Length: 565
Image (cartoon, rainbow, N blue to C red; front, top):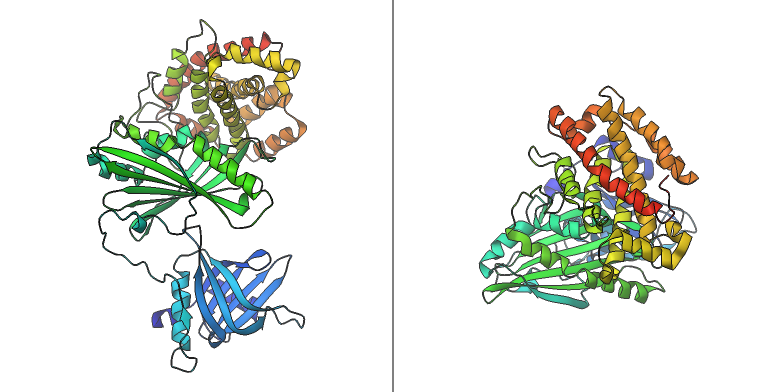
């Protein structure tokens, strides 16, 4: 504590303190960026100084500027928090204090503060205890888990490795993992807690079956005996309660090993769905030995941080969606013993999971090699088969990501349409896998409106064909002219393809992104293949292989009276 009292803020933070509180009467000890909870949540600054706690926040709702002496602070108490990376702290004052110097300022007895640091409560409580010690203010009340206490494991006590703050209400499934023995438990934990969550790992396979894209995997952080990491991605969502076709998701994973059982917890927030900031989805998969085998069980719950009239609907629909995907994690764990490097003969899934800084090609294979193999393995004698086509398109969408953030809308739209077709196939397994059968059903059910009906196979395949035409056009021009400028090629190809069929709003969005496109041709080609020679060969092979499926889609749509452009 004495060392902390000797700390000083950087010059910029001292200026911020003086700007909000006037003269720097006492040296600041620590500055935190926080969220204050009153009637509305608002962001602000929290300063700990030698003599007081200083809080500043300004929003449309109110302005808070408080300087609270340490002896005016009655208690520091930790509140339950669903997020393992933050701390909610309740500050109770000796008497009601005004929130600002204004004459009509509201007086409060307590204030809830969210710190984006798990050790903030420890520092605050320790400083509070030190400042008011000496008997002049009696014994202060300090509660909450101020330190990470480690205890010896007593057998397989799951209570010591499952977070106590989770709101689990529904047990979804219990599955025996085929092909794994109880002696594999350490390997399961190593796989889940590995730094590498690439395409051929447990979590890589899990994310692929979840059909996510724009995947960003953060670093691990150690919390006692547990490991935590944050993952961000985009995923398609059902069209209910006014939901968009897709949403950004932030997911915090926690992995722990009791010595016998392994637990992986997940707490996620969907940012683009209605009321997404009101709730979080919590899931726990427990993997434990049973006899000579391994059993995985999954439980889930929905934790609401704010109330809403549609709470019961959100909870039931969320539990239903989690139930439908309950088998995905056990299925990914079952593949623990599969080879680390997927084959490129068309028999294995494409490596479409992307991580920041991670190359999309394996060794000397290049990103196009598995895609080309998949395309060439497709049989077109009896028409296009959707599973093989969609797998190939999933891989092709990764190429858009290599063009930079400017192509994010096109990439997201392509993957969204792939997900829509897959959902229709899951709901209609009796119809088989032929594209023609689904186009026939759309024409029968919707007639000429099939191509404009959101979610129909006809509409989705139409836009898949258009997006592929855009990308193939770019690659063809680059392949034909080794001196062509990438930015010029992208703009010209766009005008000849997507520009013709997009809405005015979409045109303006793409136009604004293309105007700031910064990816160079050399950087783009280096991401596609390990060497210039490999790039030339693999792009040429891909362009040859993709022609037949694209003509097949175009002809299938034309037979139903639908034109690609």
